[in-house]
Picture (tube, rainbow, N blue to C red):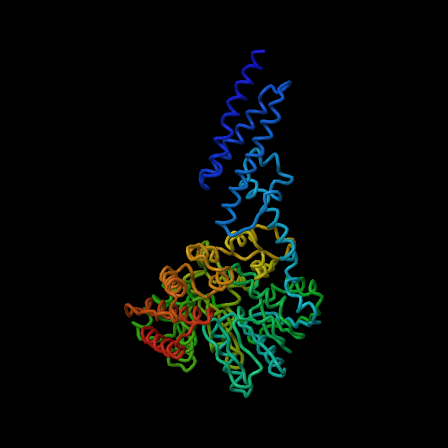
Length: 583
């Protein structure tokens, strides 16, 4: 009896609160609705704890508070939909989740149960489990692949390009702009009109039915008779590998030639066979043998045709200065150098004006030079994550540049400080097989609603890859860009374009220039971007300024803004000449 009297007093109190809370519910704003919903849910919990047997008012009061909770939650949802431009329905959220709704509230159920369920359904519907199914047009074509695999400097790409030159319409896909430029010039000089398409420039040649491109610019909507994809082992690269994977899976072309290292063979066979395409493997061996030299190379021992290899820009410049001070002129190559400067440096080495070459491992990618001897000045490198020993593939890629066919009968490999046995071991052992190709998010992710692009990409990156021979692209750079774009509330299609621009997002100066262009375009509504300014005349500033000019070009091009293209080409030429002088 005592408990019943206490329960009745509680019910009377709750009844008195009902009209007041109801009145508040019609007047409160979003931030107070959260608290009000919490208060009502607590009262419902308290009601459940009361001894309800024999008390008829209990059910009426309980139902009344459930109804009031529904009104408050509906108001909360209205505010949420308005703020996030969504259209969620109360009944759809609560259906099947009523206990969770009473326990944690409507928005909690929406975020933790309802939205993930919808997103998962959309991911499953719009993003196929097998990456090959992202390219239905390519799956409708019977394709045949020719795998040109083997050591560096063996004629793989040369042979593949012979087929491209015989085709009516073809495309060459390069890992670097300088290689795309080299083959663009070669094809045009041989009387075959060819376009150049890279992230930094486009040159359209009248009547051209062939294109030389960087691999990221591959057009998978066009049809080609023959395609050549170079340095295909880079499909495993965590940052850029998805571009090679996309080209291999998505090119609409009946004859595709893949050129690369032998350790990518099994991975290519898996991918091509899974697509239902045919393949033919051609393995290449060196015609000019490599010979290691056990004697360490001292500074006074360098000879014409030597290429000294280090693994940082700083070390390359130190070596260059060391030899220049001793009257030994040298060409210099490293990753930050503009392609125009690389060509000038290559030309000086080829002509003999600069008898030696000093380079990072950039030398191992594609360009063939008259190198007699490769001299390793280091056997470790920092790869962005750790300081480690060179892999067997890296050693072979670099050492293989020695002994160009038709110039030397033997290519030599030596070291300056370290024992040659490390290099010999890396040259002799079998390379680790490439077991996974990198895949990136496709534009279909834009068709998935509900979540912002950043959250969708994060969710995409954590989804398990169903096929063991694919892995997800590292999307940290995308996330960084999207974080910086958040205040501008841009449509996702624009965010997608901007996050895909080719520039180093980890360079603070370039990132700041990018944000200036975002401000000018979307806040100031400028019709033209401002040209970047050059603040000093040191080597590093010139190199950075060149990249800013590239960003000015690519940003304008991506958003179809009016810009001074002639100024871009003239400025690149001027800056490249200044860099070359400084070197």
